[in-house]
Length: 205
Image (tube, rainbow, N blue to C red; front, side, top):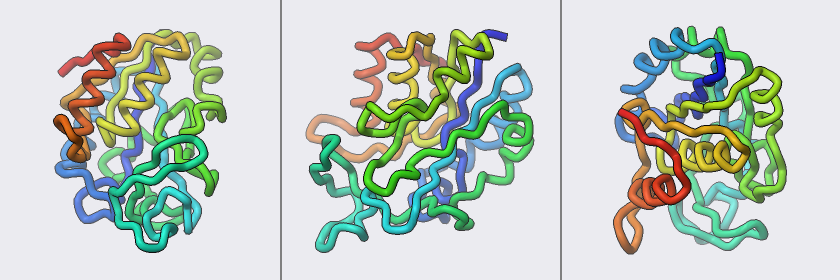
């Protein structure tokens, strides 16, 4: 009763064929739906961007997807247009429908056109809260178990913010998939795991 399964962005645009497809992203959907049956508390997040969002490469003339730019709140990866409000790509994957139907709460994020939002707890300015922490405390939740897409961005930021908000944080790696953008040393997935180890996020298979 004190654990919550937090399903991060199980949306069509993050699955093969979507606008920001994560390799093999659809493969985790049915296992996540089955896992959700074991939890008293289920939270689902949903990217919900207005058209022309500032995190889209198309909003920055001359920039390409996956480049980075400086924003007032820090460095921002520029993404292909994705999960636009009321578009088909913003819909949940059909394999996750049962879990969504029994969710305590659906957290829509990325709605501010000027600020991206990876985390289930904060926008990327790390000041604006989503309200999730308070909702979890009201339910007596002390541990958040994270699954979904993508491992190295929205899952990672959510898990790290859960710790910062005083919750235990566990990431079930086999129930996630990574974008794994290349970095100077390794990938964004490697960097996420280094941050997990430093902060105390627990990884489980």
